[in-house]
Length: 140
Length: 217
Image (cartoon, rainbow over all chains, first blue to last red; front, top):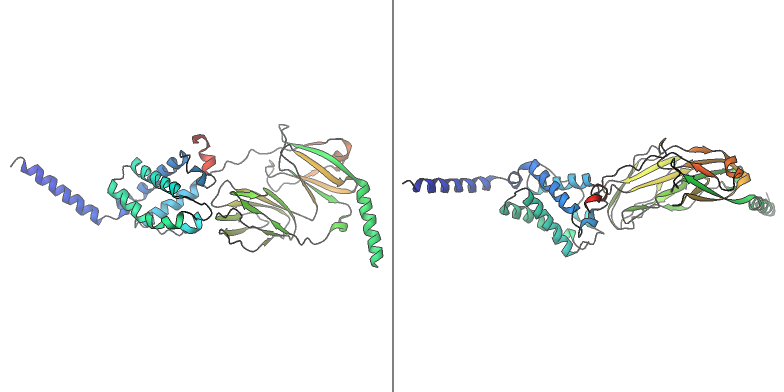
């Protein structure tokens, strides 16, 4: 009996967790506005140190990018925001972003999420939400 | 007026200009005697009517490699300026300046119609997206404009004797971007190589990635 109770409790906790995360929006799983801001700030720091992709951002306004990407992520994660900024095609046209550089940016975003202890399943949900934009971004 | 008389007058005017024409090399410096690039000298001639004609040219303020080209565009009043957006990257060009507040959403390959500048003064241009982009449109009363190079040098190929007024302008003048300093015309003629000193402000700090993270690179 002594051994059964902890197992039972763990099982209860696990199902509780699963149940909880199913009802949570991705926005909540990312810790809401603050969590998303932290991820974007880490992402910006990662970009700043990355020689491969920095040039795409060099002349861009940090605050403009930060505000735009926070709202974009919040919107994509079903948070209480609506992204009204410029669409992905307009933003990336003329940049000629190749596949390797695009993948590098995705890598930096993953690292930014890891910097903020975002779990793998939640990371994957974020990437899945952003993936449809891929064709609008590369080779434009 | 007969056309032959017109021709004669024109020839005489040209001759007068030619005779009085002298090349003066000016050096513009800042308060620390360092050569000052991007300073403008505006010259108003005494016989202004001789060259007072509507300028039908279409001027160009381009966006190349996320930079305004030219950095400073001098245009006569009422001139039209195109913003062709040659780097094919989206820009959002704006001016908050009193002489011409405007906003231009430029999409790659979709240049908008030209903008006319009706008032004399300076329009400071920026880009919402690329904070490091700064440009200036200097609107003058159909005068002669000379710009200093990276060594602070201006070759003033103007007919010195026919100069009525001269002004010096620089975007970072300590008295503000709209300030035009009056130059005593005598200083242009008295000395072989006149030096004009102007007190300027340090460049404004920008917040583009390259400005904020330069040290991290």
